[in-house]
Length: 199
Image (cartoon, rainbow, N blue to C red):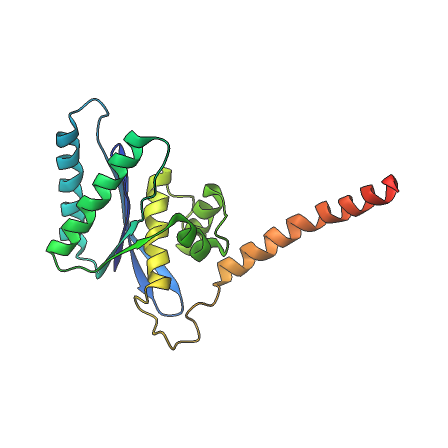
């Protein structure tokens, strides 16, 4: 099993999946650890750390995937995010659980096939890949699951590196790519018509 963490001080997404042969994944559990913005920083960090500990002990994952933190204009937000990411990595390391970090672009590319995909696209693909009736909410929960799926496919959780399935798009990804291509075709034809009229 893989536990994904979308670090955040106000909302920390936590998702657990099982990686199956053939690039298939199954939802095990998902949730969000929240803390009140008005509480002291140290109390909020302890609260999130406790929740992460609970999830690690309850599911005993084989690996933990955490979103890699980048600098942002909002210093307060990035600081809290980095602090929670550090808590998650320490909690896993103390239990001897391997930890990996993935950038948002890596996750988007792994889930949708495009590193520039929008959040709604990622959420929709997560729902399809896990055969869910609707998108996981809030977005932090979907992001945590996306991180876990990304690591399952890029970290080699179950499928051997030599397997022909490794790196190949899933049926859901192929369907999504076809739908995206079909949606773009009419726009291109319209551009051609408009260009012809301009001449």
